[in-house]
Image (cartoon, rainbow, N blue to C red):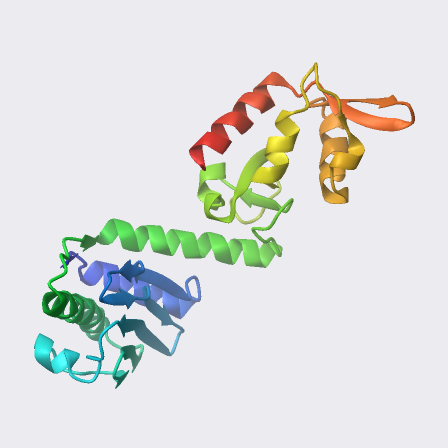
Length: 269
């Protein structure tokens, strides 16, 4: 495994500024890494206006935790260990940009060397590679700012929630199995996300697609939360409804909405 660290002082300065202003609380420097011999939790940098912590957990299949750092040729800073685990929690006062850079570099080196050592003694191939650069830091800072904005609006990424963003792609709702459906433009929004989106569960989107001109879907096939959305879509003329034998049925989903949902479901599959 190889980790290429392309971060520079300007990146560390942005992070320090983000912690001091409260615009960011944490960022993921490395994703979860999995091998047969070892699993590494995401390498996370968290902080406040006073201190920061570089943290990760390395879990081994073999009982090598107590000796892995020594055998991998890396010094031990801010770690606790047991036979099958190494926990990194390197905590420092938020004072020096250079020191922050050094501690991030140490966290990356620890993961790289220790995991490669674990793979070596198991003869396990470790060809994974990771690159940390300015783009990653900017993306993480921007992501954190958007999450902060949602907190100030009291918005949550949850089924049927209404959230603001510049685009549906900004919401990163795919991992939650939610599809952002455009609701309208909010020119009065104070936080910069002028477009409002409703987050539709994939299961609801699939049921919604069944409401075509030839298939009238009765209301009892939908939950209360789903029926609230359906009634809203009827008012907006995205969908049609008709009462049949005392029951409301939904049909005639607008073609533009249908096309969008089909594309979203395929993209998120």
